[in-house]
Length: 278
Image 1: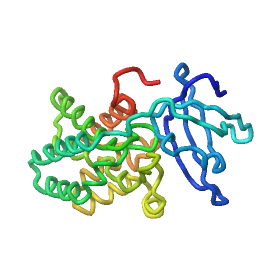
Image 2: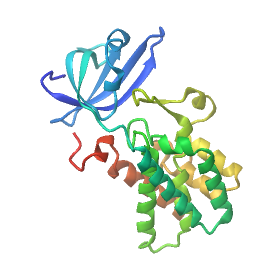
Image 3: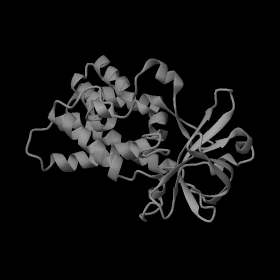
């Protein structure tokens, strides 16, 4: 239950329309001294009286008026106020630096087709790549989060390639680190006012998910080995992989993606401090 004396961190937020066309906000909230995540909703009547800038992942807030809704097993919030504003994500200079790091990695590729194809994609979609989140809720869900995730994956992969015994095509692994989630630049919409992340409905009409998009993109560009890495990077069908990893490179990309998405700088407030997450 809500404790009106305590502060809560907004873990995620999604603003959408109800069936009758009204706006509603769905939030996941976490109390400072508990591991429990509370699901909450703000209906349009209350939403109209709330500054949308408050409703941003990472913000610390206090609930001044809320009640449990047993019908939907969530909490209805009528009044919420900002205690501490969180960073929205990577700033412009940080995003530029990460993007340039990725370009430098691609420039080192020995495979000229792989190099030219990925460079062309990155340059053509630079603005989206620099701002996209890596996920809606689970990890790196902030401005520039995808860049952060990609660079973490590259660094983890290179450290492993240096010590593992099996033969690894490094160009292919680094390409997998860069492109495995790249379809998310089309799959997600980022609200620049509230920083809420939502699924792109037009994307969903055409593609299963970002794995499906990336698999098709890679095959269209005659990069079948990369296509397999993208299709299998979730590891198992249970985790929505299109296929399971069948090459050393695919196994490695799956593993480094898992490490980054669970142990990397996965929350926006970690960008400001190395302190424990709330």
